[in-house]
Image 1 (cartoon, rainbow, N blue to C red):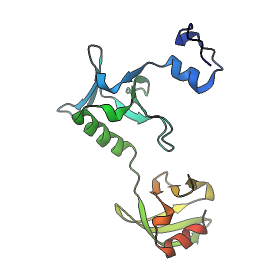
Image 2: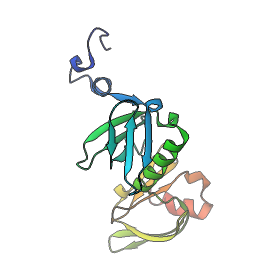
Image 3: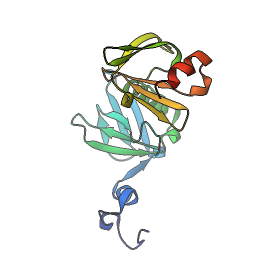
Image 4: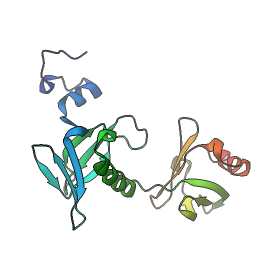
Amino acid sequence: MNDPEKSPNEIPADSGWEGEIGRLEIVPAERVRIWRDSFLRLHVEVEGEKEHVDVKPAAVFPISGAADYISFLDGDDREVLLLGCPERLDRESLEVLKEELGRAYFVPKITYIYTIEDAHGAARWEVETDRGYRVFDIRDREGVRVLRGTRVLLQDADGNRFEIEDMAKLDERSRRLLDRET
């Protein structure tokens, strides 16, 4: 599809995802080091090149996991680095990255559903999560998304996210309650 004689900048704008990837400079993980300084600012450095300070990581496709890339954004939310294959980072860098992504994508996992009741046009969910007991409202069915048949993502009326990793692993009562909402 891509002409090997063309540089990435010469790929036509309408060539879709492959064209976009061709325009980006993806830095291999083996050349990247990530750490926090004493002020807890995140640093990312490309070996022999530039160091970026006070950046935040963002998964490129956080819900679907369709691509294995992490984008690093500056204070103005501009991309300063695109990291490929983050699992290849050195142990310390990978640990810091996982902690940062865990903060950015904090999503409690629902392990049990006590009740789902109608409450003034919204569904009030009372659940147990891996982070404890929670009660939240979901305004409409668009707040409940089933992915890959068994994974469920929920977004409550306040924008908080919750996840059911696998509907089949819920107890029977929780599954029956969930079936009414999906």
